[in-house]
Length: 248
Ligand SMILES: Nc1ncnc2c1ncn2[C@@H]1O[C@H](COP(=O)(O)OP(=O)(O)OP(=O)(O)O)[C@@H](O)[C@H]1O
Image (tube, rainbow, N blue to C red; front, top):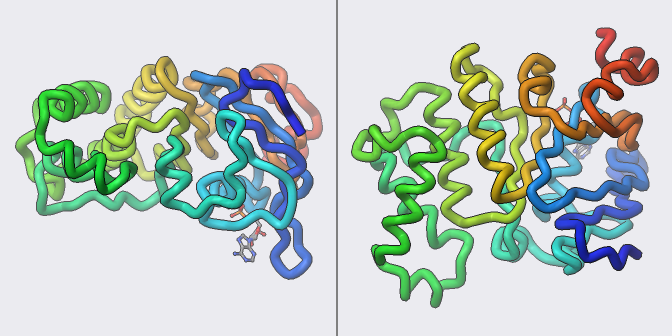
């Protein structure tokens, strides 16, 4: 097992079988602090399952996931949230009848202990965090607006903001630009480029134009295994990757 303390996330020999079918198969990968990693690959490659394993939604059949050197495969979902891992699903789960501000406010305590949130009623620190997050997701001007009237893109950003309120050190996003306009996609690329300055981000994405705007290191999954990994240019030129994914 890894003893390297530099990695934020160390995944080693991770496997999950569903009735004998290995959706993730002896996978080993490492995510650095403040790294933005994009995961691509064909349908059914195991990308979503990998995020499910990291956030505890699915239990591993074997292998290890260490977050800041702590084994997390045995933790349940809310414990994993609490150690500092936030996961955004494809469908937004914002509170439509609450304002942007209130949505951010209620999200603060979700990743914290009951005691922690009891002692944290609208203090200056909470105010400052809401302001910082609203600025990051570019909704400062809309803090008093009901979330239900936001555009599709703004709702997605608000949900990212709700995760940011829990101050995760690792943020995981599954197809964040699905259904967005070209302008919203550009703004989301800028948002992710900003966010990875202070935390690590893992993004699953199929939109290659978007991937090019954010990609540093890319992992290509295929049949639960890593087909290729490295800089975008290298991965794009890889014949195996072109054959199973990019060539389609
Ligand atoms: N709970 C489950 N039970 C049985 N099979 C599952 C389960 N979850 C995922 N699978 C299977 O595991 C494989 C990987 O699925 P996964 O959703 O992780 O792929 P993906 O790379 O995210 O694909 P997509 O790009 O289509 O979202 C698929 O064949 C899927 O049918």
